[in-house]
Image 1 (cartoon, rainbow, N blue to C red):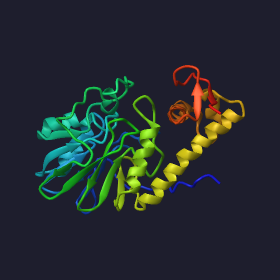
Image 2 (cartoon, rainbow, N blue to C red):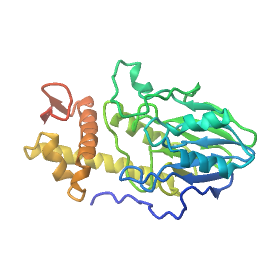
Image 3 (cartoon, helix red, strand yellow):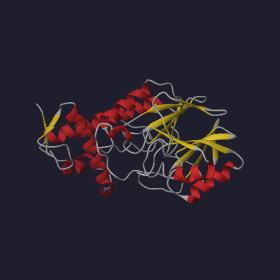
Image 4 (cartoon, rainbow, N blue to C red):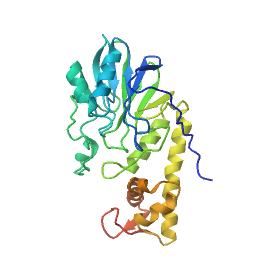
Length: 301
């Protein structure tokens, strides 16, 4: 039996309204729903008085105005970015201009790959460069809040989560979501790193996850364990396809994603490519050329 992921999709909210969702935690959701963002980008506000904002979202004046209006006389001291996809970081420029707050992130788009000479795909927020680069284990202190930085590459090479230490609440960006699994798309996305980042979370003591899209995950470890098992099952599906003589990704996707709408096949193909790259890295699969969507794959033994 395939693993049953305990998806969580029920979410009650109003666009543009800041809501208190936990001790020291508020959220306002941007009106940018899509098959990749669910209801939209959830921007989190930590603390009171002088606050941190996580993932200001897309370049959407109405969303940034809603954040500012909801804060009233409060000030923004930190703008935290989980990663540089277009639904997460572009809004930081408007928010920074209005508040003067510095931006904090692992680095620009592709920062976790560029040092290895990997050229990442366009499509990320190429205009974003953080004022302050942060690393795993760094702690950022506010007036009545503190955040631990947890580096979780995989979905992107610069993906980082933030734990509100006072609540043991982890803001997981797109690394772990309740409504869907994450897309891992090479070359910036990396399945090997993604799996390691999931294992990293299992060793932590976070009590609740707040993803950027969708509702909270209040039983984090079973959710992460299910995600790991799901990816292992995807690897087995790839091997089954190859054993049946299907060695190309284009032909694997309809067999592996029978319940997925066809318009999602290109995204699914990217995730299959990520799993294949990981299997090649482990020595399980081989191909005659570079690992690519057009490659023909076979077992090594």
